[in-house]
Length: 160
Image (tube, rainbow, N blue to C red; front, side, top):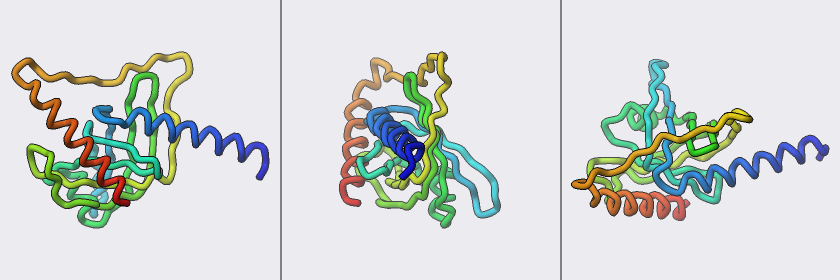
């Protein structure tokens, strides 16, 4: 191994560690897929959890283009992970690990993406603030629902 290759390996390991730390629950990620006809689609997802094995689990609505594209066999996906001071681009192959999740308030599948490529899209000297959301006073119960969804996604990752 050349010194240059070792440096790249260290940088990639650090980036994967940062991705795992960022994807503990509630971080926004844009998921990009392509239909059988070559039509691109993106989806903003916040029900995303990263695992130690270089994989990411995502809850995808059965009505979404992303789910339809992956279910039809077009399993190559790209992710843009948007966390505070961190923008990560990742690519990989997705598969439906669980057709029906139990913790979700509407029909979703648990999709696991095995990350094969990862890049830092942050810009040195620019402070990035991730998109955020919060529940209104009358929707506080949704925090408990989200925690259950994140736990279910982590469990799916533990099964692979």
